[in-house]
Structures are given as structure tokens and as C-alpha cells.
Image (cartoon, rainbow, N blue to C red; front, top):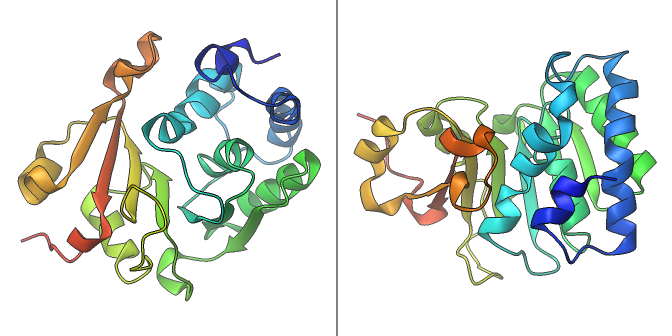
Length: 215
């Protein structure tokens, strides 16, 4: 039972609770075959991976029908926990490494996540557009914004304007210098009390500012 998840998300349905309960076992099993989580880190599965991913759900709640791309998903974070949290939204989880996408496909199927589509692809090669693009520190943020440029839908269906939501832990001085007050930065420690989150941050940039280029 993932008590840590219930601590911060007490309103989960019985189906969601069961999905989050199954996640650790499924990832432990697959991690023996295809290493998508550090062997040392798997013991902190719910804190370092699931709860970290769900910081996006603390930041905003998505309207049913919202389309979300998890860019560079790796083994499925933040996409799989978010897909369990928002079953009425559609998630595309993309990564250029096929074996990682295989894990995403197998775990999504085992959890009954019918709202997940997994693709072996670089973000630059995707043709579709989405309401939001999310990710966990796959590259420097300005490079991530470059990947997302032209891949976000212009019409908003959520109170939060369409854009990029990025989970990152390092210093953000470069991002602040480039995007200034157009960038919203939230310390995850404002939501979570565990020491792991003291240096973790969430970055949100509306799509209308994605044309700003690094000089």
C-alpha cells in the first residue's frame, strides 16, 4: 500500500489505489530485465519517482480530454503516475530508446491504463500537437523548450494556458535570466515535507513564450 501517495492525495479511487499499489512490483520485476531505475534508487520508488511525478498534479488539475506528451519519458515518469491520476486525459509517452518504451507499454497494459500511448521517437520527429508537454529533467530547459516549439496546441481547454511543465532539481539561474517573469517556478518543498524534495522544483512556461531563444 503506497501510504506516501495517500498522504498527499487522499481522494484517490479504489482503482487508482490499486494501480499505484501495483506499480512498485511491476517496476521491480521489469527492472530486473531492463534497467530503467537505478538499482540503488528502486528502494525509494514511491518517493523519488511516483510522488515526484505527481508534483504536476499538485500544480494543476487537467480537464477531461486534455492531451499530454511526456517528452523523454524513460521508463514512464512522469507519464505513468500522471496517467493513473488523470484517467480521462490522454497521455503520449515518447522516448528514443526502444527498450524503455517496451517497459512503458508492458507496465501501462498491466495497470490497465487505456489512456497511454507509447512511442519510440525523438520529440523533434513527432507530428502531433498537445495541450501540455511534461518531462523530468531530460535536458537543459532551453533545449527542452526548443523541442516543444510548434508541438503545443494554440487553443486552451484548461484554466492553465497550454504550455510546458518541467521537473528539475538544479540551479535555475540560467532559466531565470532567459525567461524572467514569464517562467513560473515552484519549490516542491512547498507541497512535500520529505527532505528529498528540498532542492526539487517545478517549472511552468506558457506556450506563447516558447519562441524566446537563448542568445
